[in-house]
Structure formats: C-alpha cells, structure tokens
Length: 364
Ligand code: ZN
Ligand code: ZN
Image (cartoon, rainbow, N blue to C red):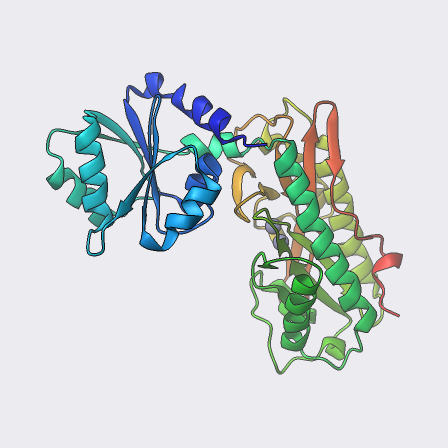
C-alpha cells in the first residue's frame, strides 16, 4: 500500500502554521519517505496539491516505477539542481517557500536566493522528521525484518567464533553474514572492541587485536533492509567473569531493563533516560555513562526521537527507539547493551531477541 499521499497530506497541513505556500525537501531520506523514490541526488517540491520530484536522466525509469503518480522534472544534462529548482519554483509562482534548514547547503541557499529574488525563504527544522518518528505498520514490519537479518547474522558469527580472529576479521565476517542473511548492507560499520578497547565508544576494529586477548568483546552492529535499519549491542564473554565484570554487567542490564520498563505512550523522553541513568548512578558509575540512553531508528540509524537528558519529546505509539545504556571505565573496558523497542498503545514491545543474561553471553 502506498502511504506516501497520506504523508504528504500530513506535511501540507503544517504549511499554514509556518505560513508557507510550498516546501522544498532536500534530505534524501525525507524525499524517499514522502515520494517513495529510492534514488539519490533528487529534490522534492511540495505545494498543497502538487508534488514534483526534481531529478536527472539516470532516474527517469526508476521515477516512473517508484512514484508514477507524481510530477517529475528531469534536469537536462548541464542543468544544475539549483537551476532546476529555480525554474520549477518560478513556473509555479511560489512566494513564501519553506526549506530544510539542516539539509540545504549554504552555497545552494545563496545561489537560490540570487536566482529567485522574489521568493521569501523560510528555513524550517524537523518538519518531516517528526512525521518519520511515528512508524506505520509497514515501517515496523521493515524494522522487524532488518532486526531478523541482524540476529541471524550474529548467531552465525557466534557459532563460528574461535577467539583467534582479530577484531577486524570478526567485523568483516559479520558484514558478510548480514548480507547473506538478507540485509542490503550493514546499517553502519560494525564495532568489534576487545577488552579495554571497548571503553572507546567508536573504536575501529583492529587487525592486530585478537578476540581472545581479553575476557570480553563488545559488538555493536545492525542491518539495513528495505531501507529500514536495526541496531544492537551485545558483550560476549570470551574469558573469565571477574567480580568487577559481573558488577558492571549486571548494573548495565538492570539500567537497560529499567529504561525499557519506563517506556510507554505519554512519557517524556528525558524521564526514560533519567530512570535508566539512576540505576547506574546508584551503583556509583554515573560519570562513566556519558551518552544519551537511546535514539530513534528507521530509515536512518539515528533519528527522532532522542532519549536523552534534554529531550522533551513525548513518546507516542509507533515510535521505535534503541535503549542502550553503557558504563565505560578507562583502561578496563566498556559494557553496553542495546535493544530496539517499539512504543505500543499500552507500553512497549522489545523487537530484538538476542539473549543478554550474563549466563547467555558466555562463549563456550
Ligand atoms: Zn548500536
Ligand atoms: Zn544505537
């Protein structure tokens, strides 16, 4: 079912409050969300009753297949996107035009202002992102599918783990498994960090560090599907469970469970962060949890809503967020546990199912 007309209609209803006659969409994910077009380098111009995709000759056929109901402006060879926008905007006679302030470059903006002196430009933020934050049934199904790819790939990885592989070997293998399990790609380059390296939030997998070198390894990975994404983190125990490891692991797991339990419609995002954070603070590790609790997940790996201290978004059914508390102790290592959670009308559904109890993360 094509839900893009409904999405465009919802967006058009916000034009009045912003006092704009039309809206120029430059973010590729937003163009795709509103038009169904999956290619790149395209712009969407929406008025109250028209939707025009501006693209180039490479995409003529794809546009006809993916969004047959929309108007298409195909740029001639040599016509710049800004010239195409100026031509179309001029033709339909828009005077107050909204645009995505965080997606358009300053250079394009300056060029457009010069080419369209009669147009008043209104920079807007997050108009499409707030719509995207609430997923419909098809989008949730696509996220479930991307989670399935990630979970099957992880099971394959775990089954073959010897301990002699390098971090990079494991990350490369995981990307291969993700594709073999149906993903179009990894949703981001997997993080595979052994021992103390796991305290570096974005350690790049090293060819020189072996998985069995320390007692544990952190893996943060996900799959891109069509085109929705998944995002998980698990720590696998490859050596012995020290009392310190057990304390940190159990604290992170308890914080994560508290965070998930706090999620329901109507709750404010920052309060969910605070619930989980309080568990880590009470255990004395507060200053070692230095990022937000989670983020929205969809066509982008990080999108609205954010679960963090300064986020006053009210959670609503259909939102999908990660819950990923962590404790990072310098020169020791980091523990993070991440799952993907759907806000339902009466609470939550945890969409990810990779076991996370301390017993279940030991690699035999
Ligand atoms: Zn992650
Ligand atoms: Zn994440």
